[in-house]
Amino acid sequence: MYNLEKIDNYRWKLPKSYKSGMRVDGIIYSSEKLIQDIIKDKAPEQVANAAFLPGIVRNSLAMPDIHWGYGLPIGGVVATDPKAGGVVTPGGIGFDINCGVRLMRTNLRQDDLKNHLEKLVDALFIRIPAGVGSTGDIVINKKDEKDLLLKGSAWCLEHGYATREDIECTEDGGCLVGANPDKVSDRAYERGTDQVGTLGSGNHFVEIQAVDEIYDEQAARIFNLEIGSVTVMIHSGSRGLGYQVCEEYSRSMLQSLIKYNIRVPDRQLACAPLDSPEARNYLAAMSCAANYAWANRQCLMFLTRRVFEKIFKQGERPLGLELIYDITHNIGKFEKGLFIHRKGATRAFGPGHESLPEKYRTIGQPVIIPGDMGRNSYLLLGTRKAEEETFASTCHGAGRVMSRSAAVRSAHGRRIDQELWQEKGIIVRSKGRETIAEEMPEAYRNVNEVVEVVSGAGISKKVCRMKPLAVVKG
Image 1 (cartoon, rainbow, N blue to C red):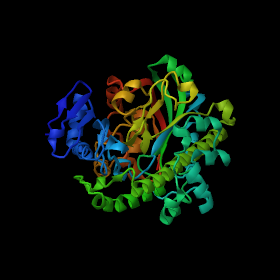
Image 2 (tube, helix red, strand yellow):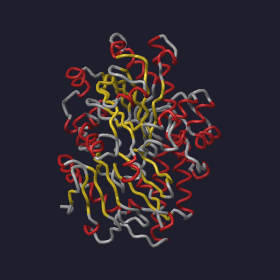
Image 3 (cartoon, one colour):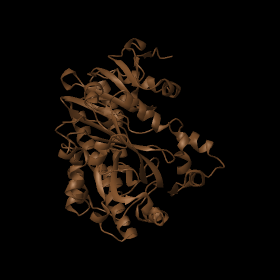
Image 4 (cartoon, rainbow, N blue to C red):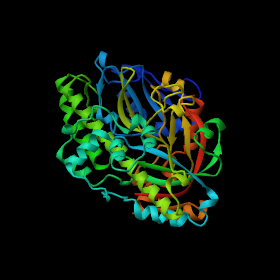
């Protein structure tokens, strides 16, 4: 259908001859099995559309968790060269700017949770604000919010919600430079005032897990993980503020298509040259939203730590509540002179990269891949091959195979939370039954198959696998 050419067991080429106007080929990372779902979803069409972007470099890329999105597919990676007329497109970064995941280790073992797990997840559900429009206890005025948008995770450090070790183990130190709060609208400010330290809805979660498989003993020792180790994964983003930034700038950039005579096959890829005032304004606002998201996840981890301390009646250090890493999925950055759009894709620097914390420099960047409520999640490492082939990018999760509305229809008459408890012993708490239906395991690809592709292709390296024990959903 798309003239896809199989390169090897993990890569497929969508030749630029597929569509007149494509500047480069598309490359989709996938197995023979997964490519059928990808074709059915029609996401390769968006891979082709992205290849029209001015200044695009090398290939329009897609990870094995690719699915249809706004403009660029979720799972898409595009690099543009500012020296060759390269552009930025908000649709290539997404509405939930810096939606991302952090993984926290503990000194606890799975056996330690036997008499505490239900109390623990119930306490998290009470303590962590979740659901559509959720608001939290960390309410800030506009002056404080400006400060947070400039500093990101450093704002949390100043206000007692973070440690220096947390900042060190957050991508980019939890702060994008170039943020300018004056480029954020009053409406975006309003939406961000009371959503710091909130989970939101949809696929966002706090999940208690246990390591059940180790693939790289040396790396696992560096992370201080072993079979049975309890971990906590937190998935959230920039909430209403980030959505507002993307919505407003996506709309305003439609004028840039006319002003700069740019032709793209999809108006959702509205863009502007990187050296234009329109692009600079968007990047300044996007950086603010990214910093908000880092602060949000840091505060969510602060709340999670307090719950663990209360339930186990021990302090943070005796419990070993240490951040392994925080990575972002929806962001745009300048790296090696190029502007990299990662939408539903994860940065994956290899060993030796100067941006990594010293303790990870020999093994590469931690890459955190959540699955779904009923299957595994993974801790991977970035590789030098990823730096060479994919602009140091890899997958970000399992990838949807059902729309949310289709999932709700499929789950009609079922209690997904009860099924997960009865069949797998997984406790699920959520503000609404519909959210659980939207996020049921069948709505996603099998994350194990997705990880096998990026591992087999050499753009990530497996460290360990974690199984879910309890989940708090929005």
